[in-house]
Image (tube, rainbow, N blue to C red; front, side, top):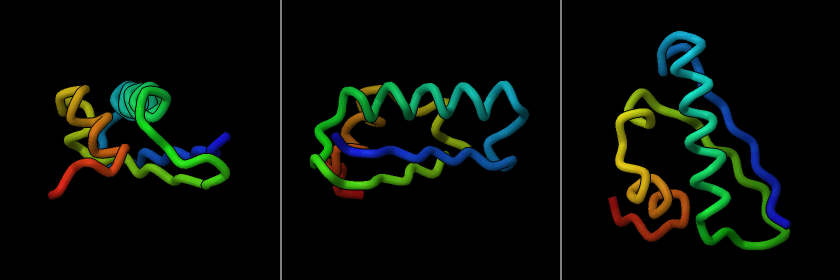
Length: 66
């Protein structure tokens, strides 16, 4: 099982926005294809809240070519 760490700093917004960003990242990571026995650290940015959920899952999966 991959391990996951999520960080959301004050640049994301107030506590409500930080918690929302962490919930979105947690759910997107659950749906994404992650390598087993790997540690992941996800750092939430200010655009994490407004980003389309499908794009968020693709970005975590590594399929995003940005």
